[in-house]
Image 1 (cartoon, rainbow, N blue to C red):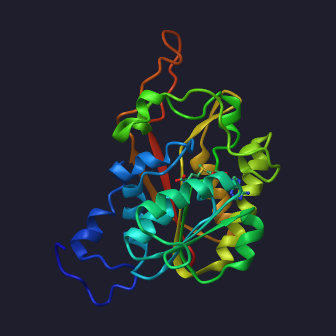
Image 2 (cartoon, helix red, strand yellow):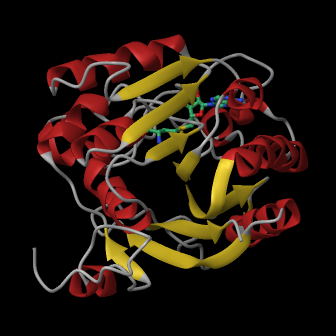
Length: 277
Ligand SMILES: C[S@@+](CC[C@H](N)C(=O)[O-])C[C@H]1O[C@@H](n2cnc3c(N)ncnc32)[C@H](O)[C@@H]1O
């Protein structure tokens, strides 16, 4: 521990020095060896990135919710830091993947975390007393539309698996309530808002919520997803507390518009933070 802990700190267990470091508006995404076990999921978080958020927004023994938990990374990060994790996902295969990851680290269900299969819109109703929400929804129907999915095998080994180009189509599920299966972007935003509205009512007052998502194209048009997410969340009652840019410096570069037009390569995620005031 570097620096001094201030007894008035009701937000987290960090010293002033540690807290200050995490207020930077950009972070470099950080890998660790346990990330590689998530590669059967098309879009897992990296454990260290989520640990930083959980250490910033909670104290030990608090409860963290991820309504789109996929391969269980949030549950691993929470367990590593002595927080209780609750995860929800529609796809039962992802629960199996998550349980394998958590068992390998000796984190047992119920003691350290709970993973519930189902539609978050319904499941959140049965949950209460949440101290922090961190999540990443499907990126609209991008996995279906762009032929994206799992990443190239040569990159699936150890530290590099997250940087490879995507191959083949692997989408989350065929279910109608899967946010990744909405035909138009507005329906995606409405469904996302409905789930976050439920989550808002289960989050304790003055607590935070982080949505991790990048900008992407809708019908080939560059779209400011960040702005739309802020509008949806403010409509629910959340207060916007700023965006941390999560830099992913090792991804492959594609010459999308070259040599005729400028087309951006998205090499960062936005961690969009909100508070319930
Ligand atoms: C971007 S992924 C999240 C990945 C996760 N952060 C991880 O580390 O593996 C989005 C997840 O949302 C799930 N999902 C989509 N619609 C859902 C819904 N209505 N309720 C619960 N989960 C849903 C998908 O199955 C998918 O695993």
